[in-house]
Length: 524
Image (cartoon, rainbow, N blue to C red):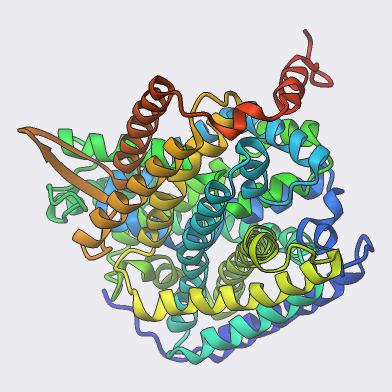
């Protein structure tokens, strides 16, 4: 059954009213938790004063995005169980966050680091390596912001509003309130966004199954329909990942995504905006509540199959489902929830990218003497340019599955893991070995994606008769780590000194104190 995308005046009116209301809230946010927005710490990190509640909404709005509402159900609809890789990865991610991110937060607060590249610069004493991390963060953020714009584009298209001009309007609104209010805007809007999304999802997962014969019929329909579709690996899809290739793809997509998510500049920006490490620990315990919501949203893909809906594009699975079952006024509310769910992370991502450029490229190479106010002004300008870059991704790099945009960014950002995460625990790696490993990982990961026309993130590798299907980012990271370790040993054998060895070890001492520090409310 096809769903006609005619202009729905009622849904569009409600959508516009809520969209404008949120935009106004974004401008008002400049007066919330007042601070000097002419300073980068205030504009780009909210003054590092967000407590547990605000951080929970900020990180939730940052991590659970239009990717959640559009891309995950679209992948479940199109490929079946493979789309559920998002659930285990958001479960595996939080123990990683609990252990690692308080360390990064601690040293960043003490030294005034604003970006992950700041940490790498201080940790290794290497301008080249920090620039590589900054460049990677900027590059990886572009397709992720583009994914948010795809979410807005899809819901507008579902309401009969087509063309690129609606995206340009959304970009202008997003750019304006981000420029004025900085990180305070998405932090405040996240409260509204979460309320709308929870209402929409709970209504959908209760009402729609009652109209299609219950969850038993939903799963039966998916089981009979999915074997006739194909997965990104080219193997027949199944209700569960039954083939070896499908299982390998599923496992590596989950692992790679779990390792990648908190390496993104926007995730680290959310972490560094908090009051301190205890706030991060508490949030890593309660944020998995969003994973439950994500599981419910993923099931909307199966509900679309059970309803007999055939969207013109997998990305339209959820919008077409809502149009079919709900009255226009509720469809408008649901679509505004998706759009607002795109605006919040897009704002944080553009701010994070602007912080990277300003601190690690502009100030490092162009204006070392730049004042705090000059840094903030440059970051505001760059945040606008980043959104333009994301628009170009949407217009010139179309994908069948929107999730491929996020996975492409993951291929790149995973290559910063050795310098950032391993660097939190040891300086054993030589800075030049890390640079070379990063370059090889970036080059090979990009080549694998380009070899498949950027249409899938699972690569089938045939190496001396050994065949393995895995997420491209994992392949590239393994090559990165092996090469960096091997070259570090070579440099040690030839006696090459590493500047990082000559720096003081106070950061590592602080890390050890941080690990030993008891967490409030936890028995030791």
